[in-house]
Image: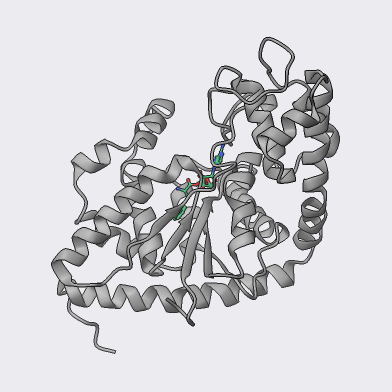
Length: 334
Ligand code: TYM
């Protein structure tokens, strides 16, 4: 609890360009929650190092992510938007929490298994302890709530387990966070393989909508989206392609699945896909315009980063000092 408001924490990796999945599963909800909570959002550049990065591209991606946070509607005066690597407390608490996490727990992480299979040539220790650094991110700010897509649920569970374990030994040091997984949009699927999550790293360009895709590209990708046999726009488990498009359309318009079924009753997949494409393109237009303006305003973004890095450092260090004291590390002589 900070200034009588509950604390919200989340972040995204600073790799590639965000997808519509990142937007509907996370970013769009962050904007909706930002008045109600004291919010911290990190550009998770340390997490991104678990996969080899080209340094110059990586720096650009991190800045682009920062600008996208702002362009999507997160006011940097009200929300603490900062770089994870600029707050050294993340790495420091990460190490301490490594010593309170069991290998057996980490072995169960499905994302680790997936990523290890994908990057068989680089299964590094960072990939393995990724969830512990994530726990440190959240616990440093004493977060009450963490809005994420469904794929992060297991990471939130291990974060809670680590926090509870620590609190059981040392008293009430950490707030135990709750995951906030939206009812709609928590798992947006690939447009080409609707049984697979839409993912930044998908090599098939038609599988993902990027937030910075221009309107024609967005509409074209939706037109090419894989649909199912039949021609009815109906939400059902045996129609993963159409159901995914309906979820996307519902998230953007706020319409229920029944309303969408009624709207497209008697119309074919072609009309429906075009409508989804146009709706998404329209939704993203203002964000894209604002993004271009922000990327051109170096001084503004630099100022926001500097101010918010300091704010984040202040809160994070408070928790870190407390933890250091609890575990018995000797205080520095200042
Ligand atoms: P990342 O960068 O993979 O994803 C960022 C957010 O987007 C959500 N998301 C999706 N939601 C719906 N459908 C999809 N297809 C989809 N793809 C991604 C993710 O669930 C996530 O909310 N480990 C985190 C970053 C992180 C973090 C944290 C998050 C590091 N520390 C502390 C919260 C709190 C991640 O890899 O997100």
